[in-house]
Length: 402
Ligand SMILES: Cc1cc2nc3c(=O)[nH]c(=O)nc-3n(C[C@H](O)[C@H](O)[C@H](O)COP(=O)(O)OP(=O)(O)OC[C@H]3O[C@@H](n4cnc5c(N)ncnc54)[C@H](O)[C@@H]3O)c2cc1C
Image 1 (cartoon, helix red, strand yellow):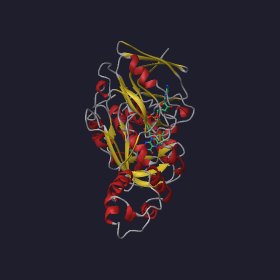
Image 2 (cartoon, helix red, strand yellow; image 1 turned 90 degrees about the vertical axis):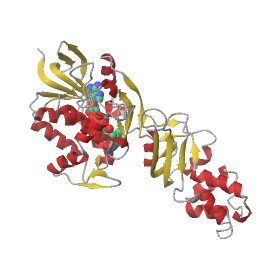
Image 3 (tube, protein in one colour; image 1 turned 30 degrees about the vertical axis):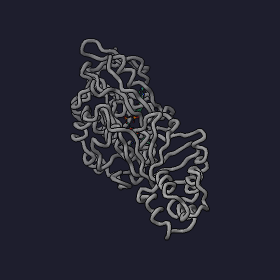
Image 4 (cartoon, protein in one colour; image 1 turned 180 degrees about the horizontal axis):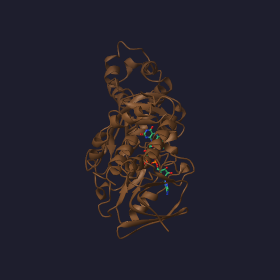
């Protein structure tokens, strides 16, 4: 006979554990199911092992979605301060690293143990590792058949995350269930991912692997729906296959294949103006001038790709050429060939179309009793603790009403 619960949560990651704990502490009988051998691997590897568990500045503007207003309700009802209060209650020491990003002082494992303890406080039943074979709805009840017995429940919460890092258990389960129940999806693609470049125009930059510098980067357009334009000031890193570093991870979520990203390699300076005005006073050779401001190998490369010799005398250069060089530094436009894909992506953009869900509860309006939370939903945060904040906020919105 099927075992009976009020709520089955499928996926015991960040969102699933939080939702199970909140619902169970309200007195619901909750079963939490995950197919993985090891609990919450994504939390464990997050933030370089220290879990950047929230960002004190998190707000709707830090998220991408086809329906940008959807996330507002949940984010405003469960804020970073609410999560910080939970972290403090569990005596987990933390620190702010950069622009509001909060990390554990010791280890991401502490966040996993905290969520486990919150689940235990509500007496959540665990099924793990456990494979879900099918999910059906008959009248007002859901029937889940698994390799460790059948479950009957009034509500099902899908918290199986996105497609990134398949080797630690990511699957398309959430999207398949949504499709089976007739819900629309927003096309998925890798986000927060290094960008790759190849071909003759990239060749001169390939030897620059290892160089890092702070830049401004932008892409996209303000036309159409959703937050389509990204603009960030962060560090960029040249790699063997292209570009990475926080600046590139951030902009990758806004980048559309075939379009350029525009990089300002010296955001503090109008390079053309400095060069033209400095003809009489600056160092004599172009290479020496540029490498005062940029890593020398990058400066040489930019000169070469713009047909200029490093030993050319600045005083002899026509203003038009200096303007072109200035543009190459302040508005370097390059078209990525692609990205490193889900293998390296920190998140999956797109997912369950939020127009199918209630912003108050995360329930599918067409399928009463079926809920979607966390990364499976078409709400994707910037790099810097925003994705966990969405996982917590969407989980609490659901856990309080399921
Ligand atoms: C390397 C890396 C570092 C990151 N660092 C940060 C960070 O520091 N800060 C931040 O905010 N975000 C970070 N992220 C993003 C963050 O980890 C995710 O956005 C967040 O974990 C999403 O939570 P979730 O609960 O929706 O999904 P997940 O945490 O991915 O959990 C999904 C769960 O569902 C289970 N599951 C999947 N398919 C099935 C199935 N078919 N049956 C049963 N169970 C299934 C999985 O095993 C997993 O336990 C990072 C991501 C990566 C890859």
